Amino acid sequence: MIFSWLGTGDYDVAREVLQRGVAAVFLIAFLSAADQFPALLGEHGLLPVPRFLQLAYARKQPTVFRWHYSDRMLRLIAWAGVAVSASLVAGLPQRIEPWLTTVLFLLLWLAYLSIVNVGQTFYGFGWESLLCEAGFTVAWLGSSTTATPLTTLFLTRWLVFRLEFGAGMIKMRGGPEWRDLTALYYHHETQPMPGPLSRQAHLLPKWFHRSEVVGNHFAQLVCPFFLFAPQPIASIAAAVMIVTQLWLIVTGNFAWLNWITVVLLFSGISDGVWHTVTPSWAWPVAAHTASTGGIPLWYAVPVLLASALLVYLSWWPTRNLLARRQLMNASFNRWHLVNAYGAFGSVTKRRDEIVIEGTDDPAGQSGWRAYEFHGKPGDPARVPRWFAPYHLRLDWLMWFLALGAEGGGWFDMLLVRLLQADRPTLRLLRVDPFAGRPPAFVRARVYRYRFAPRAEKRETGLVWIREDRGLLVPPVGARAAR
Image (cartoon, rainbow, N blue to C red; front, side, top):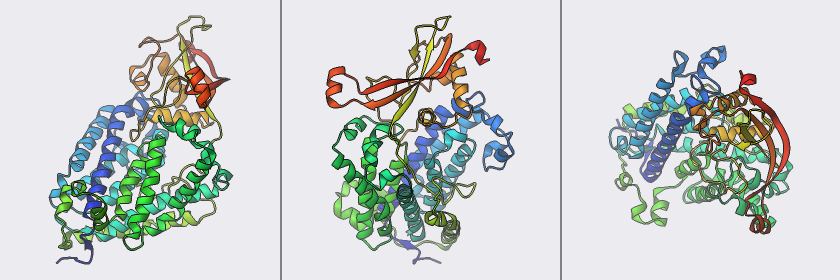
């Protein structure tokens, strides 16, 4: 039996982009886990998973690590995730029966869910839940041997709607800077991890920044509704939202948040519109042979059951969208499905940075030198770099710490690891001023940073101008750390 009504041949390009794009983000996420997880959360990490798993709360989470954790096991899962993701990026499983593509995406979802659910504060970002939900949803898009399930396309657009409209409503309910159109006076300078063009964006005239806010409100509060309109209106709405996401990619470093949003927005772009505005070489190979024969019963039934599950779970985030006290980046179930999203309900007006310094002076009186991070500002003369969609987790938490967030023990342990010259920890940093040797003392200072105006940069050669705000942590030596 063929479910011809469930499938469509008008979104084969969209399916290719969705499956390969989400798989590419999974690949980056698993690479990040293999590279950073052991030092941050491993057996000897800053927040060790074995200690976390002793909590009753942790033992209730769906994760393969609830029975056993080891750094070796984590790396095996992460590299297996990289391999599976790479095969999907290449489009190989999509050429076979749809069950294979579905099974592989569900395995990626479960593997990454296992990591997220023991990742504690280092994995407490909204885009972790977004990747889990996206992986589960696109698992039901079938393969090139079937038509594209309409219910899955609709639910992918529903995911984008919650992501964008939720973020828009968080802003309208948040700080007054979003309502008086001044938020972008500050954001490019104070965002968690600026990029190489953030300073240029910050120095644009204020009328342009007000226009940015208006454009943001239009993209997040108006366009999401038109994703459900007939074509080509849905494609136009998706294109407008893609443009706004590309601007965020160019001017910042928000891990894979903007990248995966662009991918998911292709659920609103039909093949007809895509073929009209692009040359044939831009069409994914598998989409050249669109399959319009419907969906077999044996695959249609699980697709409909999964769709029904996502519809059922939509009650809680829908209610949250309408709530006066809207939650931001919240999961309503342990499986991270159908979540609430949002970011920057208020914008920080000033940028404080914590700079960790060490000295090999036995008296701790002089010779202080700074440890440098890969992404967060440190050296005032250094131009910020692009790292997204890769996620520098320690750098991001240093930004939150400077805002007054609790260290949760990880920052104290970071200082201890620096005093020990712990090699895995030092690999998370860009510059170790002691070349692998343990310092005698470490300390943490707070500086207030601002982008140098054009004239000041010409005079000083500095990208940032900073002001010393005093000590956060006074000098501590190895004996005190013990």
